[in-house]
Length: 128
Image (tube, rainbow, N blue to C red):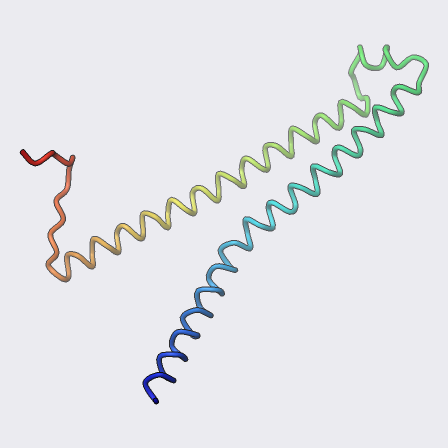
């Protein structure tokens, strides 16, 4: 009976630690995703409003041809900046994941070495 309770508590503890780790790991990528979605919606809303204002002007074709300092130009710049930030964030997440993968492989190698497990390195060859 005590063993069952101990196993149950250990399982719950491991499960809770897993949830905490998962939450901490996913929190960054989810926050980036939410911020990115909100920024996209805001940018689309601003772009639509700017286009509507530009269309309402009598000389909108002149402002679109010159392209200097107009609202659409500013919004394009904001969109480009947002894309650069998203790319930087995704690259950061990829680097973090790569570092975790490298650390995991290193831990497996050290474990195998400590326990005398021999894993052949190099390209795999078909057994003839």
